[in-house]
Length: 177
Ligand code: IMP
Ligand code: MG
Image (tube, rainbow, N blue to C red; front, side):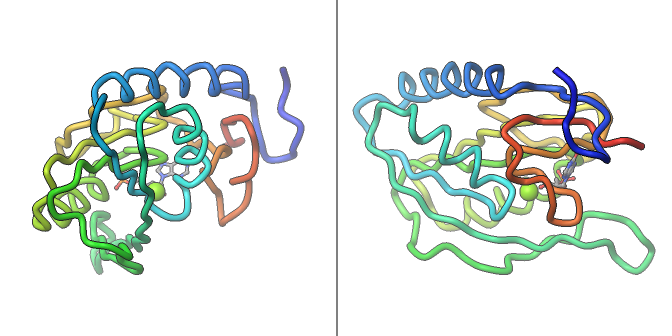
């Protein structure tokens, strides 16, 4: 299968591969949380496509909430400065929380989110990411569920953007350098 849009080098994961893998991970999650209510927390905007696909395959009662973050480099150009741009609508105290991410790269974003959310006393807090690029990890963060490990190339599609474009692609593609 070849990429259909200019700017894209090749398709890395097809729609079918993504769907099959999300179904597997959803089954794992449903087994683990059997008999409980799970709140999915999506990180806007990248994770909404993955979150909705995942939620459709979960066989446990599910609630959904969202937050948005902005991350930027500090003055010396080092990454890792993260803040909440839009907070959750509801408290999470006493709830079982699954943080749903599109991609974990350096780990800065996830570390910040886990610190912030764990301070709100959820019953449990776990992480599910569509993509994991462990080769670029700078801070160690726990990832409980991952769909795919990623090579060190910039990818777009299924929620992931480049300058806000390509999020709506059903597949995940490597950008041209
Ligand atoms: P980190 O784990 O804090 O480095 O940040 C991960 C964030 O960087 C993600 O939420 C994405 O917004 C962005 N990101 C990292 N790698 C990619 C990529 O390959 N494509 C699109 N966005 C990416
Ligand atoms: Mg993100």
